[in-house]
Length: 223
Image: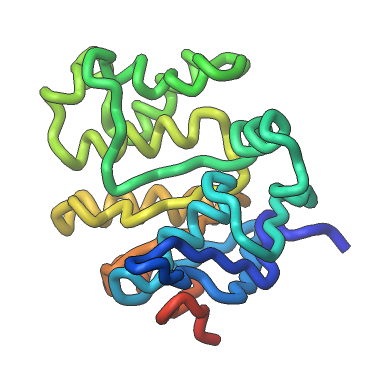
């Protein structure tokens, strides 16, 4: 039996609170996401959704529990190996696009090549821009793009290294309904093509596009 793309087991994460207190953000989170899954993680603000996403993607070490991506226990690896797992298997899409302001659209999509070699990167980047309706914007800097276009650039950048798992934190949060629908369509296509998506969202319409929806409340996943 093969390992799922993502498995979290009894993950816990706390932060320091006021007056030497401790605030529990994630408690005993058990989650499996596999090929073809498009999972929406819903819940009120401050319930721990984004924290769990960052832990799942190797960006934030948990206090306890395990995160396994593609059969590799993420937090048992050294920093270098963990970074390589992220770079080769995980793509991130955030509500804030984090585009480099002085790079044009094409070079923003190619940004992952600064950290690692990606075969045929320029050809792949141009294909993604065409698929996302951005071919005529490839030489525009972010300030000249609409919000929806910027989010599509950010998604294309995340997909360039051909990740197996895509982690999306409120990817439609800043978008109008038309642009939100376009982003969700691309995420759904990615999962149907054999990838996996874990998406944090407040948007009920976005959650309805997912193949599975999980509620989180006060740091706990509700089954």
